[in-house]
Image (cartoon, rainbow, N blue to C red; front, side, top):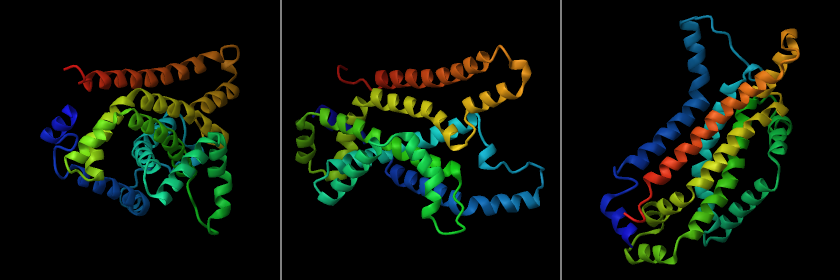
Length: 271
């Protein structure tokens, strides 16, 4: 009840009334720009300002930039999708619950490498002839779905850990379903789930190296090609792998420390 009163009095987590609407509109505008305006605008700018920057196809785009792009995109989109799947799995609507349960169980029961092969090799057979669907975009979508299925179970665990009194408090205050979830239930469930959520993010970022199996140049594959192509690396091939491992450790350790900072900042149980 204390959390409920505090949330309603401060308006947290949406202190500004139009914050959620503006965030959704901004995300929609970014997706529309990416799908419909990115390529024509880039083509017009290249003709107006020929800077001489060559076009890099998907099979040549790689390195840590590829790992960061896939990891950040999957992390940004998988968390809200996982929250919706967790809420749908607990829904009282049979169709919604069945769809969410089927999606979660199917994705969690199939290895990521199988989904990546499906995205890169088999998806083209189901698209209309002449349709071009970038391989990196396919990988981003499948990795996002994969992470969202695991995050749905993590968030569902946080929801199950809340005492029944929190739901009853939301009902006693006259809140509808979405207001109760936004103001009372989800803030507490996500706070409980922070360690597991960040652990999923860390595993997801490390799994970006699996894109090498679908002919993308992840950091490990780039190092392997460099070692095999240059005779100067003979006998010291372990140094590039140590460098790649150190970069991954720094990024993952940074996420871990940030999760600990969030836990301490949101620790309001005994204040």
